[in-house]
Amino acid sequence: MKDQQFWMKLPPFIQENWEKAKFERATSIQEKTIPLLLEGKDLIAESPTGTGKTLAYVLPLLNKINSDEKGMQAIILASSQELVMQILAEIQKWGEGSGIRAASFIGGANVKRQLEKLKKHPHIAICTPGRALELIKQKKLKMHEVKMVVLDEADQLLVAEHIESVKQIVKATLLDRQVVLFSATLTENTENLAKELVKDPEVIRVKKDETIEAAAVDHVYFQEEYRDKLKVIERIARLTDSKVLVFVKDIGNLTILHEKLTYKKLQTSMLHSDLNKMERQKAINSFRKGKTNMLLATDVAARGLDIQKITHVVHYDLASDTTQYIHRSGRTGRFGAKGTVINIVTEREERELKQFLKELSIHLSRKEFYEGKIVDFKPMKKASRRK
Image (cartoon, rainbow, N blue to C red; front, side, top):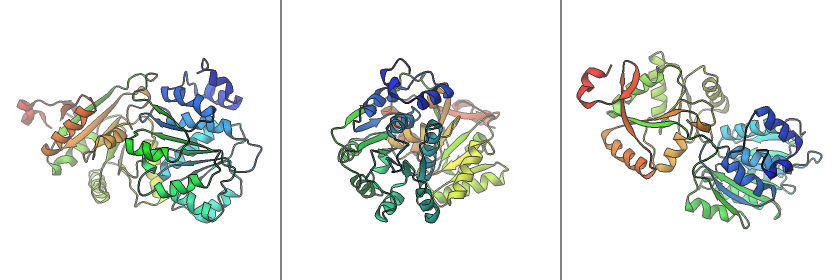
């Protein structure tokens, strides 16, 4: 990164933290966006999951903050509690030694406790949209000194549930603020909605990160009757040295799956929107620290979830479209690491899955279990091989 001219514009504390992190160079999205952000340009950026998007905006944002001032100077919006907390952790890590204060404000959390945070005059607020708008309307979150607004995972924010809140939050800031949107997938519709929030934006698209060694991710599938999907999940849970994230569409089915695996003496964590903040945090921490090796999650609950060294992503229920498939699958193979994406499909779902992967130009192979290991599917020997 030091051969980049923009490096010299970043304050010493960031350079020191970069050295401490032992990063050799910036990723493609960072190289393409950081100089533009340092110039103060509005930006709409797309880059795959696991390519360093958070850091791409965090470094210019920290550069923009004057730690001597009391007012709030930046607001970051994210669609889930987990993503808010992850962004806060990144800012605290990279802002170390700067005197810059950051705080999180999320829906469902104790309002009184969050108001206490505001008394400490955070320079950066990381929020879910509903809670941010609520605090703005109460005149508790003051927007008149905000220099930068960031929408992280913008495609999840520019949806019916959040878009009006997002528009009102951006509107509450002064006209000379910088608006930045990052997303793993950027549809034409999302881009058009994004352009309503920005002024003369630069649009950056990184489809594949050349600076990250190509992730050795295998995409495989098991074909089973729906009632037999549980047996495959059991076998996956027993794989040695595995860290498995399983996507289940329905909370009811997810809970039943969790109970059945627990009955089989398999320790799993579960993550869904009906859990309270403490339960969600416990589930994530147990999985992150390796107390459990499998996390069952719904798509909504897993938004923005960043857990290192996930070895397998499992689509227990088929993704609804290619965008969802990319979002889910991107949780493994991060920064060039090896990973496996497993689809458990019925005969009908198999056709749909093959169509998805054809559109994405991804090779797909059918597998089965043999003596506790995943092996290539052999139709003629199926009866004798499956154990």
